[in-house]
Image (cartoon, rainbow, N blue to C red; front, top):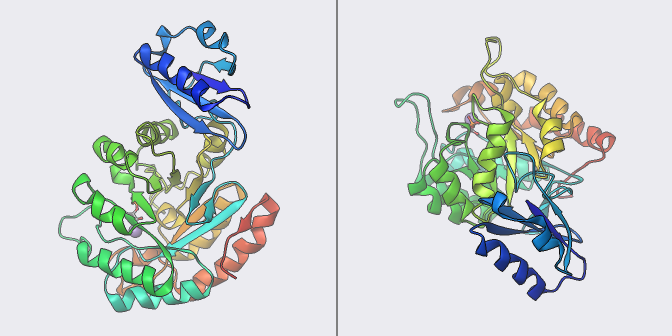
Length: 341
Ligand code: PEP
Ligand code: MN
């Protein structure tokens, strides 16, 4: 259920609505639009009677939400969520490009990649400190040391950083350095991790699971939002299909479908989606063309020596070529590429 408050509703009016919801054992969530305030309600909402709210002077409208996911749905909030990260906006008309290596390997490697990206005008840098690898014998990341190196990148280059939280034990340490916390595909349904991330303030980039439906992804986002953290960015990164020519099947269908059903920003990661570096630019263009709010791209200065995902990583030079194309494409879909000029 969602209760739309009138424009002139006061704080005490909102408190009265919240109290009435809580009395019936339900939970109220304040959802702020640019003008109106909506109170989303979860819990045993069948116990609530619309009339009880409609008779209140401050209430404009009461709607039943038909979807399984509630707080992330457009029924609760019709306008796009725009996330503000230190003044940088994600969502709406903004097209954001995040780039960086799959893993943090060394100080030298990190600065050799981040330096050129910063010069190209990028604002967000990605790099994994804790790596969820299919094989326990594969490189698992530099862990705490990696987080320290990321803080150096932030301080010395002024880039904002995104890195993955692999489990609840290391989430707080990751949260301390991350401007955006990534929850990876393999953890999309790690519900304790989602709930804990939902109690943080950091924006969360939630990647779609390898075999997750669009609805599964939205339900996982609901886990985070229902704990109070509305700053969730969804990310399509390819799903498993019978196809073997590519690493995954990048489901670009997810972009317009999610745009219809959810107010949250949706990014695309074509690097993991296709898994072959020279085909990444084509899929990044496709992602922007179908309305993605951002793309996340793996970039490595020496792809053939990378400790993870080298085959899908662009060199900074090839990345720059792609960036110029994305910049030209953006206005055609009413977006603007956000670069430091
Ligand atoms: C990554 O971003 O490097 C990563 C491991 O992604 P995913 O969880 O989508 O596989
Ligand atoms: Mn990777």
